[in-house]
Image 1 (tube, rainbow, N blue to C red):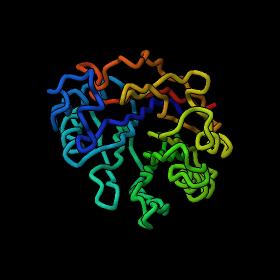
Image 2 (cartoon, rainbow, N blue to C red; image 1 turned 45 degrees about the vertical axis):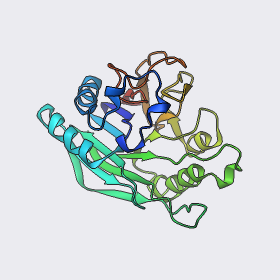
Image 3 (tube, helix red, strand yellow; image 1 turned 135 degrees about the vertical axis):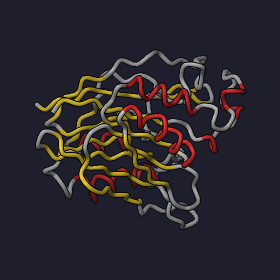
Image 4 (tube, rainbow, N blue to C red; image 1 turned 90 degrees about the horizontal axis):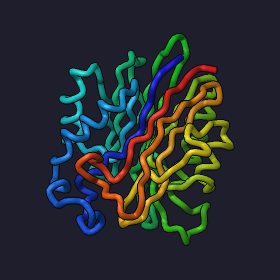
Amino acid sequence: MDLRIASYNILADAYIKPEWFPHTPADLLQPRSRHALLAWRIVGLDADIVCLQEVEPDSFAALQEALAPRGYAGVMAQKQQGRPDGCAVFHRLERSPGHRIHYFSDRLEDGRVSGHLALVVDFDVGGDRLRVACTHLRWDRPDRPVAQHQGMQQATELIDELIRRDPEALWIVCGDFNARPGEPLVQAFEAAGLRDAYAGRHQPTCNANGSPKAIDFLFHSSALRAQPDPLPVVEAQTPLPSEQEPSDHLPIAARLLRD
């Protein structure tokens, strides 16, 4: 196995508040204005599998149209509870029939389920069964106990309900985890036997409200070896989105090889 995989939170238009991006020109924050640049950015990653978060139906349709001539097919799953976005996986590999949408059972403070999900797409790569889980774990207030964090509950459910129930598969789990390297949520994936492709190389991947942070992750089974792409430096004054970067996140990507 030798493939490239990328993960990218593309920033849903519905979540844009101009005051969060004071260094970004206003015209770049207009709805649907970033579609062409997002497609260009994704094509430039040259990845066999691209996992996207904060994907809205119109952005998915625009990316499908732009990426199809490049050999990509895509599948999307929208969050529940009336949320405007979801996760999508684009790929230029032959995938196994069907895919799985796992809606997390964690509940919000008012008792409703969160609506967040993991989109799992299966591939047969050189005789190996590869399962790719794309997710956007929920942010929670840092003053809440870790055990009550919505994202931690979702991560635990993903590990217990999917990964540990299919230990024979090769797994890739990636997305916006809304957690930082070394935090309990990230450690949970390491404890489950997965490896962090950017271990020891993390740099900020997101900048909103002038607060750069590393919250995007690409985990993989221990039978795979990762060669992660280097990341540009993001500082408090770095504009994201910008004319070169159409999201408030940077994409992360790695070459994965079978050990």
